[in-house]
Image 1: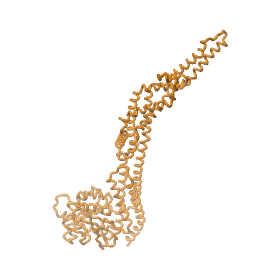
Image 2 (image 1 turned 90 degrees about the vertical axis):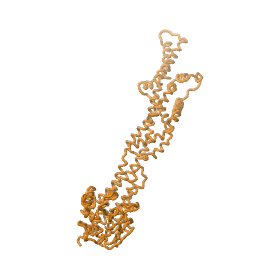
Image 3 (image 1 turned 180 degrees about the vertical axis):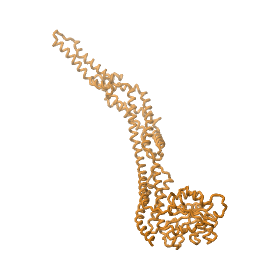
Image 4 (image 1 turned 60 degrees about the vertical axis):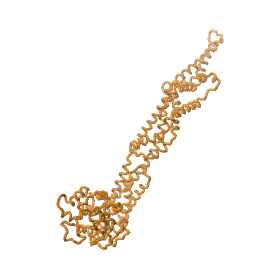
Length: 603
């Protein structure tokens, strides 16, 4: 009575914990569902996603079990054809409730041996196919399930079995001397032993006992295999269920442990043990979920910095190729460039001599009577014509499929850095449709415009002298002329010797005037840039910078957007991992370690 009262108090105290646990499991399941429902940019392995979906189903199963007022355990008999699962169930029931025959496979349907007081609505649908009710109170809170054979040739039986195992609290792996380590059964064991309690039955023990000792006994061999799988003291029962089913106990071989198996099921698996088993199973399930979420998060292990560096290399190569073509074009246009620079040098010099010389440089006397064009409009027209000629040439052999080719190069570079092509393909598709003829035209036009402006900026000693000397034309001539006129006036009115002016005295004004204008113009003109190489160099430098800036603005935005989406995906996974860790910590705080229960799990 004391023990029973203690158990009741323990169950009452655990009820709030069970509700809290169910709530945390529901929140965790919702997190998994939300992550699975979102559109994934990263191509996760479908098998991993399917496993994640299976975890949500398993979590819901556990929530349903926790919501039930009854504390019960589902014990599924797992084994191959002919190992005696049905015989074992019949022996435990004391009557034939499962068909037994030499026909293979024997077990095609699911048979659940359920106490009449246990409501069917709290049981999982996977075991409701064929319920056999009983009134054995020793098995009141235990449901014994005879599952389809694992090696059935009928595929639907195997899938039915896989649908039952997640609902199991304990899996009773039944083997025979010939079939205790077959491939299918061992694969299922390895898969489900991560988060399920396992006990083992070596049936047909009489065959092990009576046969000639020619090798290692099957029970010893099986125990050693289980030790290698991480079971320190696996719970293994040796029995001959057929003898017990046929009431032939007097003929039993030595070492039969069927009574131990019955006592374990009926007496040793109490409500306390079943609660600990359910909690331990849940711990393993949540841990597996956390490990899978961590593996999925780690699979998105790419560095945006590395990808951007690779993309910059691709862009630099493209810019370099364009500059080579631009340089070739400017070389062909060097005479045209130098003539333009000479005219530009004249236009940028103040004074009355520059427009006259500019017309004379044109080679047509008829233009002497025409007004000189404005520098800004002439320069803009010149630049536009030059750029049109350049892009017209590039349109045919370079820019025809440029966008698609660039997209492929960028995808390849990203793929080499660990980003699958599908992650970036859609984002780059829209950029590939850019009007690249217009793009490069803008870069060339901006480069030429900026280059010509830069050429006339004060730079180096020549530029600084030119910027000062630029003030001389149109001003120095008048100063020189007035100085000459002053000398003439001095000789006429202030000199001691009498002086009579003549016609040639006008040269005192005109000669300094014209000579100062010519010298100041020649100085500024000489210091002005007139070399096409200077233009080509600055043009390429500016095109390179402009193209780099525009490439960066366009493709960095694409990359940032993609990595932002990937960050959201992995952030959800990390939140899921954190929730799993909190739940595991809560389970650890409430863990009760029972030695007999620990034997059912890997260490």
